[in-house]
Figure 1 (cartoon, rainbow, N blue to C red):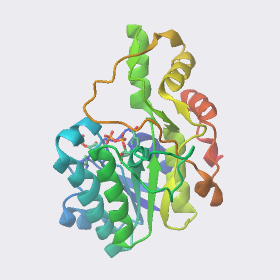
Figure 2: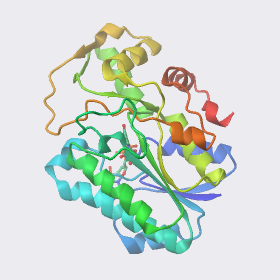
Figure 3: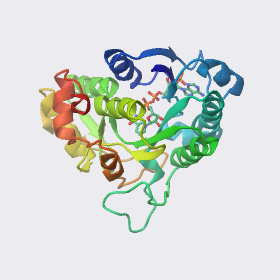
Length: 279
Ligand SMILES: NC(=O)c1ccc[n+]([C@@H]2O[C@H](COP(=O)([O-])OP(=O)(O)OC[C@H]3O[C@@H](n4cnc5c(N)ncnc54)[C@H](OP(=O)(O)O)[C@@H]3O)[C@@H](O)[C@H]2O)c1
């Protein structure tokens, strides 16, 4: 496959391109400065000649989106709409990422949200990503919208390492969800494309659901730190966050992709092992 990766400043770009190369695919990457996905003509020129485009571009700062909704709706809705339209016109498949933050507003939430649970975002970011999902589907080409959560890649791990050095990792006390280890997330991306899975929306995360302190204490321990450096602080962030947004992955299992437990994946990732989804 020839694959274009947009939004290449994302922490998913390195594991994705490493995996594409290992699987014998060719790729090009485009940073925000090279291709602004909001520019339809630029998208049309960029996707020409590829079999697939993987869109990592997003307005991803939840609080910046709350303060500036246009930033959110441009980057997370208009941009994906234009890119998916350009892809459909050129016969190019698109993989686009969304978020568990489309959930959180239901009075009686399920233990695990499925792809058919009605979204109820609690902030502008979540709403803009919900509209982006619909926009990619509406463009009408071959598409995979991957709803994911708590991405654990090199940037996040670097932040935790820095906190271990400082001896303190203070976090807000909210958040019960499933993390997604970057190696597994990009493995799912490549498998859906390689296996020509049915188009649609897929939840992609590593079970079981956990809360943020438990996840961080495990990660700190695996990195050789003292888990007691993780302490709960007040939540002073301007935008609301979902308190529970665990994504169920049964639909993915239905196409033969069985997500490993996050504890196993995390250990493998930190040891530099490839995702078990490709071995
Ligand atoms: N990180 C998480 O925990 C998490 C959780 C759930 C879902 N996701 C989803 O996973 C995907 C990747 O997330 P990430 O954390 O890796 O993102 P990220 O590090 O914030 O990277 C996003 C990239 O998109 C670029 N970008 C923004 N607007 C653009 C535009 N209009 N055109 C082209 N590029 C643009 C940004 O460039 P500039 O910085 O130069 O603007 C940045 O390099 C996103 O769709 C995100 O919503 C992430």
